[in-house]
Image 1 (tube, helix red, strand yellow):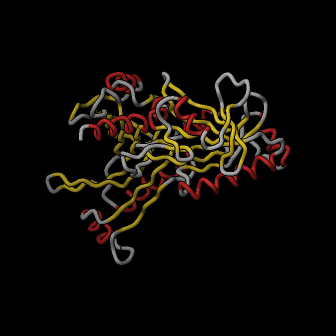
Image 2 (cartoon, helix red, strand yellow; image 1 turned 90 degrees about the horizontal axis):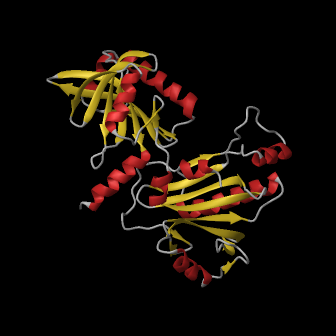
Image 3 (tube, one colour; image 1 turned 60 degrees about the vertical axis):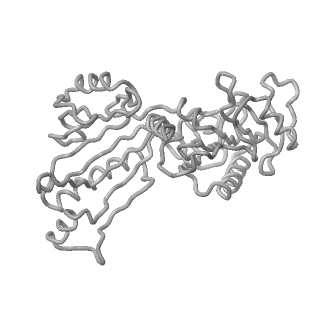
Length: 354
C-alpha cells in the first residue's frame, strides 16, 4: 500500500467523543487479530486459503475484497481492505468513485480529497492513466479523520503483486500517531527535543533571544521578510517541539497588513495547494472601507483573517494577529506550524488527566 496514504492523516481539530472507537462493519478494531477475525467470520467473511497472514475474504459495501490485518506488538491497530484488482483505468476509477460516495454517506465529506498524478504532464488517455498507476504516480486518495479515534483512508494503489486496486484502510489513532511523519520547519522536523531543534535553528543563522513561558525565542529572516520573531513551543507532557510560530514585522496600516497576509497566503497556496479552511472578514454589518473604521475593528478584535493549509505531518495557518500591551496595539501577520502527531499525543495525555 502507498505510504503516502498512511502518512496523509493529519491533525484537523474536529471534535469526537473520547469514548468512541474505530469500528469496521460494526466490529471494534482492538484486541487481538484472532478475536477480531472471529467476529467477522460470523458476518460472512472466510479465511483466504493458504494465506500465511490469515487474511480474510468477504464483501465490503457490495464489493468482493481481501482483508489484511495491521498489528503492532500483537495488538490490532487497523485493517487494509483490498478491493479486487481491475485491469483498466475505467474500472479502477469507477470503483474508486463509487466507494468514495458510499464512505461519504457514512462519514460525511472527506478531511482531504485529492485526485491528481505525480507526473509533469497530465495523462490524457485511459491507458496513460493506468500506466501512471503502474508506476506509483497516481495520487487519487481521500480520507476521513478525527484526532481521538483515527480514520479511514482510500486510494488507487499499485500492489506488490503487480496488480492495481482500490484500497480502503481503517487505522486507529495509535497507529496513525506512531507512523505519522512530523511537519518540518526550515527542513527541521518538529516532534523532537526542543534543544536539538533550537540548535539546528542557530546553525541556520537564527539568533536566540530568550526563553519565556515555554517558548524558545529567536530572530531572523523568513520567507523574504527581515526582523521576524520565531517562537518554538514545546508540548506540555514531553520534551518535544509541538509548534513553531513566526511573527512578521508590525504594520500600522491596513493596506500593508493585508498585503503581507495575502502574499504569504499566496506563497502557501503555490506550494501546498488550496487551503482546507479560509475565514476572512469583519464583524460588522457591512464591509468597512475607511482606514479609521478598519483599524478600529482590528483593535476590538472584531475580525477574522486566517487560512489553514494541510501539509504532510500537520497544519500551517496564516493569521492577521493583534495584541494589546500597555495600551499599545500591535498588528502583524503570524504563521503557525502545528505538528500533528505531537499535538494528538499531547492532547490525549491531557484528557487522561481528567
